[in-house]
Length: 199
Image (cartoon, rainbow, N blue to C red; front, side, top):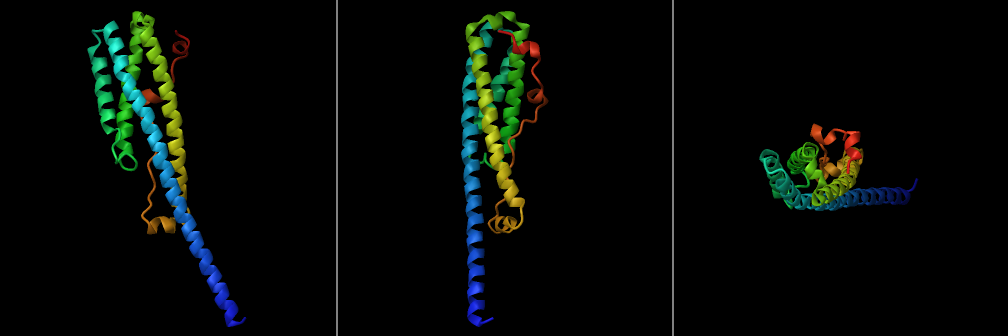
């Protein structure tokens, strides 16, 4: 083999390695941006829920004024969750704080929903029924946004942990992201069938 062929082969191998390196690096950049974008969508849906809670609490307060503990728990949980909204540390280490606050709010809202069973008059209030439906729709949108976010996190984490891309991740300090998960038993609990068909 002539020296020219060896030099050309070495140059081709080096070019392929450099192109692979840039492709992997750019893929990490793309995945990071997708995670940030999908987190913003989660944040928008969480904000919708935060905005709905005061109206729901005010409606329940008029119908069941003596249930102060439940209403205060919902208001406190909502205010804490809202205080974390827009926090620049949310993507990354702040996911745990946001998830904990949102799980607390979910548990408080489930207690609020249980009031409708204790006080049939509350279910008859048109505004309450409309707010409950809207809250249910928002919860569905939050779940969809969370699934998209978690799918993007999974794609990044898989790439960070795969060889040989892990070498590029290590060089540029790209670390795995955290999933946004529901961890409260109340939020994971199935809704009784008889509640699904009440109006």
